[in-house]
Length: 156
Image (cartoon, rainbow, N blue to C red; front, side):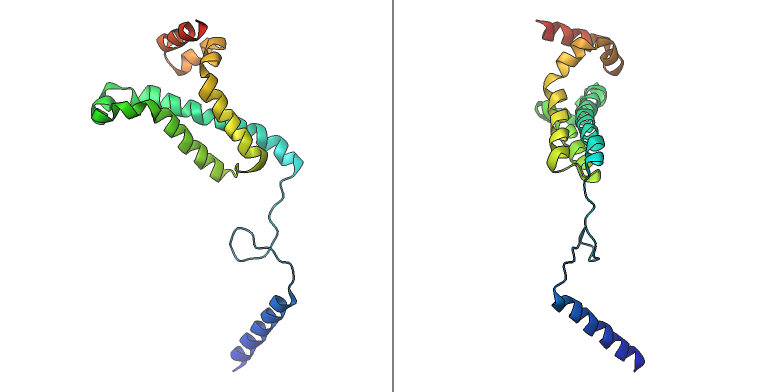
């Protein structure tokens, strides 16, 4: 009987709080009250350049996976008729990585999302220029023959 009375008291106190219309935010869909953590200027100073680096890194990782793993003859045999679609494999890998990183590190929206996209597009569009300017770094990532072919192609 005492438990039932206690539950009724708790329920009526909850009803009182609900009917009073207090401003209480729910964050993260967890059902517990609390304000969302604010994005301060200090966190943006750190996270925006990191988002740009992460965007660039996703494209580089996608291209490196395509160059070192997907371009091997054994993989080409497994793929067979899908060779026409392999042109976009590095971009698909990069987009998936960018989506995962954006979700995990909360890089969507505002300046963080724009920085992630800017880093992604910078390397995706201008990787050849970076290879021409820094051939020794890219020769360690790719092969020397590939870097030389890109330098000749971009320099013309």
